[in-house]
Length: 546
Image (tube, rainbow, N blue to C red):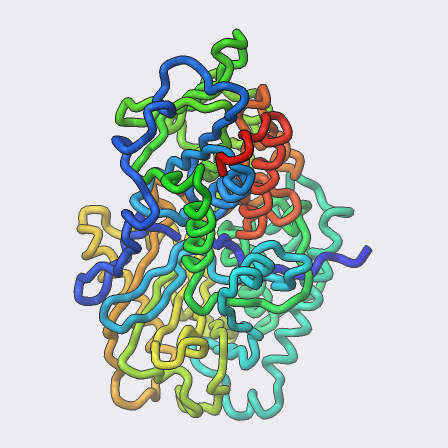
């Protein structure tokens, strides 16, 4: 079997992974517009009396469900349940739906920025459920073909000679192909308890890489295979299982209106059903999930909110992110989780990918000749490559990439900096004594200065008009971006973590997927699968309740 194709950071939820709590602030301290909560939500006081716990279950003839979380996974589960007429209550701790898929509309420039997941990988509807949903619901997309990728050498654009000969690009592609061949042999030949860093070091030694080739390989490891791929350093990633799951080689798509278009489509579908018109409850933070298997008269699920409200249903589906599950005592499970579940929660990793979007008065970084060298005007990605002749990295820390947002939204004049792993965490942890607004301003200022270094001949200094900063590590509803296979973890742990208990509590989320982990597709698929599994155990409501 040929090795699976190399994944790229672009589609990780990659889920990409990002959230109301990311504290999105504009350069003039204005907050991006949020969707009106009243359009698709209800308050606790508006809940039907029947859903407030009275320590008695719903009659079996009208099976009801609670879904914890209104991200992609939770909404896809609710959509499947509502389609069959099940009364559903979706509990979301945030003041908005979407979870780690959310689109910000910046107030000054109107730039559309996906702060979490941003790409649909292998966007073939027959293989990718997200691509199919987008197609079926008439949601517009664009193809990110990655053409015109610009490799920036030693903090500066490639010289005209380098571009003319293609030497830098050829050397990079050779290194990339060789390294991906190495990764492709991982599952058969590498040990689960050894980190990717160990095999990388051995590979560098075996190839005798020196100078620019060695520096390029380091950048490759960080950007393509570690920091920006999994949101973790190579020292933390399991070498054997780093490339788990499947992904075809179809086109990479971005959603023209942003991923919130998918969220709004799901909400519209849910609200269109009579049993679910008021299904979404925002600002409902879950404190405890109680499953009662016996006696039969009390069989069901109770969900206790942090404000003391208790809700009951025949069964529940939880889509709490792995980062939340890792926080001791944040959400209590009664009875407690099995040893296999707690072991999986402990050993599976949660990666971190943050974004800093910079919006300028003009797209100085796309113009031919920018930086004093010929460069493709349509460059999609800009990746600084550390050079032996100029070993000083162009940023403080390790891997990062710049995505040319303006290529896909002409007139936005925006570029997005992606920071992964420890670098992202270090930037996010900037002086905690500062206010959130001041921290965002400081991070945007730092990113702006670094980006300008790549274009020393940009002419009249560009003006930074607006910015957006994500901080997923400190988001109390995420605590990270998406899951990855850490050293010591195995794919079977995803299955153990998400196995049901007593056929009353079902699990879903990108961390549950063994086929498309860490992706929006994995989140959507597991949400639907959990709903279908639960419905197979509980009778559908009588006709006419839909």
